[in-house]
Length: 379
Ligand SMILES: C[S@@+](CC[C@H](N)C(=O)[O-])C[C@H]1O[C@@H](n2cnc3c(N)ncnc32)[C@H](O)[C@@H]1O
Image (cartoon, rainbow, N blue to C red; front, side, top):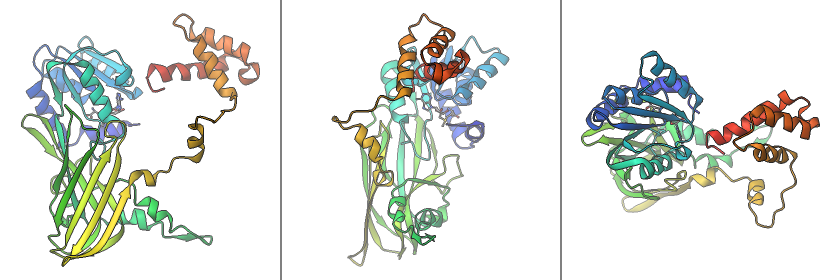
């Protein structure tokens, strides 16, 4: 979850912020209703209000969104700005002329952000309404990045006679975040694929034919994006440009490969589950003078194994034990009926589960936690 330093860094990004401001100036018309998905500090909501939006909804799962409510009150904007805490997908939101969001991490394919934007676009965007951003082009280039290599090779360690080296295999299946500089590129970046916010594909893929422009030590694939926020308003997170809050992503190799100028590589990058939560696959084949020098395949699921216990829980013949904590939640949920107060529910819980809670005040926290889960839509 984002914290205040995270929002501060986003707010002061000298590349992103002016671009979003220009795009909102271009897209918001007087009288518009604007949805700010994942409003964070509220910076984009306040830009939209400054563009004469009639009403802005600042929506965020993070309780810190309350600072937006306080700022709106202090500046006499409360009648034009509604702050809603919760997962945008389960909230009752009005039809909108403009939907603005920035749910990206180092890359736009970050957790379930694309699913959030897509669901709200389908449900709330009025015909002729405007989306910001419109598209992100994902660029990929071979890079020298000792920091990326260290996160893999660092596992070649021995402690108390235990050899950790086998973990390197797993460590090389994770998308890392690094701040790359132009001189780390071993060949120019190429567009691997485009993410279209108006019609996001479930799978994105690109095959790049690379010729190394200089010798160096190849540690992985650097990846960044160029955003098209609105027609003609773009910004880039390329290593050649000014640094941004996003930095860049690196898809690591198993081993550092010494490359020569003129070496050729075929690089394939695929992303499955664009909406639900991205799964990355990358492969590289390096050739020198028509001879295959290296061939690697990577996939993020191999870096994050599913717990064997969780797999067991999903088997149709598995009988879960009668957990006492599940009985507690079940009873609370039975009592949440739109009539009873949390105090009444807590008193009932203390009477039903005296060993668990003792006094009714002790049950209040648990009732509040269960209710909050559903209020936020995060259950
Ligand atoms: C990268 S921050 C952007 C903050 C702000 N819009 C800005 O431009 O500075 C993304 C925000 O989206 C919020 N978020 C993520 N998923 C969400 C969801 N399903 N519904 C509402 N907000 C969400 C996060 O809590 C976070 O505050």
